[in-house]
Image (cartoon, rainbow, N blue to C red; front, side, top):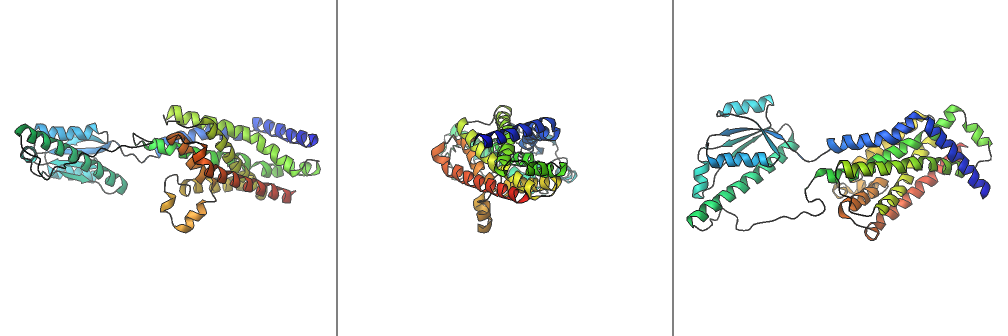
Length: 380
């Protein structure tokens, strides 16, 4: 037993020395997670803001100016120009100078004062359907809110009853877990799962294949070191690097992006450790089965990044996928870790709620590590 521990420790020291001398591994371990988190954190967002808008105000009253001001104050629209000619506004849409046009009719203020239905035209560039749909939804909400408020004030001043066109119910929506509806709060915890999966798999994907390319695999095979001891030594070394990555991405997510961490840090670290075992084992599995480092690295990227983004619930709800694809997602560790990170960060839930995901994650990690050890034994 002592000999086994000493041999494993020797492999661990060997790998740590190799990591220290391997610039590629250090860059992958330290710089890549932070760079990916910052790039995707800012680049991947479902929020649509600063939509360019041109105003055609034919009313030119206090009420019309208040309407335009409401668009600006919402933070979703940015006024880039104004014109009195409808044709000029359409030309700006054609040229891409603006994405939207707000047209306020001459009867806008008069209709509001009388409590009549007033019409405002909103033109949208539909070449980008996502932005167009979101912009139209924002515009409808802003116009409806301004019109309803103006009608109520006008009728209250004259002591008249509320007409049928004005909603009698004041609906107040309360949002849980992400009160500001910031997409960053939703995306960053998911990105942590994707980045850790890809980084950990990349770290170990070239280890065994690299031993073969350097010609040191024969020396290891001739030594008294068992395959289990060799695998544990390699995993132990890269686990230290991966653990540092966990701390790094959590700090960047909370302090740089301001994502709230409401749950247990201990729970998050334990779950991250289990998840890393699965990712590191997957990298070792490819490293043992692939002939070269390049093919092992390519396989590690494709098997972690693509499934983690598309099939883990990161951006597309799993329940909306076909039944066959839903079954396939049960084999992806990132699916369970995604639930854990978002639960700990946003909801503050604990072991009692997340134990099914942790159990499945541990099961997948055990299966992947067992497969990696078996594949390595065959190579020896």
